[in-house]
Length: 271
Image (tube, rainbow, N blue to C red; front, side, top):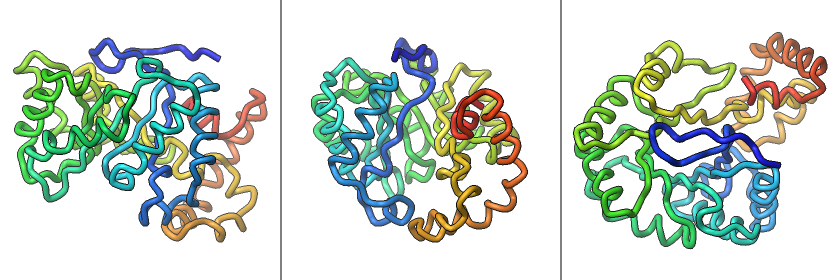
């Protein structure tokens, strides 16, 4: 099935409206506090199903198992018969306690882990680097000019930092392609804190992560609350207090889903 595509920001990269994140592929301690561990067979099956469903882009990060997610994603895409150029790959640099110089020092590892797939979009994962936003954007611009990446994005940025990142790249004649933020029908913070309006004004694509709020918006935990007790520790801690607060919303989503012959998860993603 072929999904309609849209441009990533003001680049010539075309992506489907929905992509697949791969945090759960990492097998790291924090990942398994949210998600059940996955085998290579599980990962390969998930990626193959995504490709068959028409998805053409995948998001990963250095922080996701410090390379394990990137390697698992590359392996799964290859097992699905995909070649470089068939799909779009987004990854992220982990900035905590690091200066901008580490962007340059770590890019070859990103490339190596994802081989034979290129880094289409490279993102600053958080806004907590020891270097200024301007220094980070300059370094990212250097990677783009060296043809090591094809586009630049940020993640978990405030409106002010987003505007600074965009301004710095604009001075070099380059676009800021994307900003990745938590966004779903239960968490609409970016509508109030200026990030969404700034992104729309500046032509920056908003990549919404956690669109199903860790699976809560699928409706299965409202239908079977006992499933919450079986969840990994941190995911359980997030979902349990939200169950009652979201019950009226989920009832309405179930009604709409029934009217259209789809699932609540599809309603949440379409929203």
